[in-house]
Image (tube, rainbow, N blue to C red):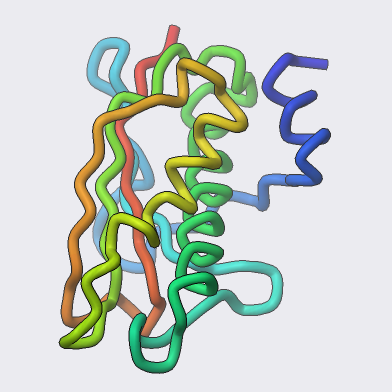
Length: 153
């Protein structure tokens, strides 16, 4: 078993089957050793987390939503690496979007749900640059969306 698979198992995480695109785009594009991954929503086995953060969704639940995005990103990483997550050398950048209410400003705290997961799973290779942005709406009403750039071997 791979080192990353062992970490996922220890964390009780089973990456889902990667989501198919919902519009005219591809899940990821590889350019050299960099893979640019399309945004993953806060979907999960129970339907995921939808709503406006700071209104219907509190910061703790939103952090969980960002973690779900991270789990969904890992599923896409695995697809991009032909099933071998040990090929991920570095999480280079995460771009996080939070469907935020007009007075909600703790957007970085929300995105820590995804950032913390990347470090838990990939160790030092999980440390990354990041953007954390509040937006008016996210597709299908989900609370959080996160995209990524990773370096693979």
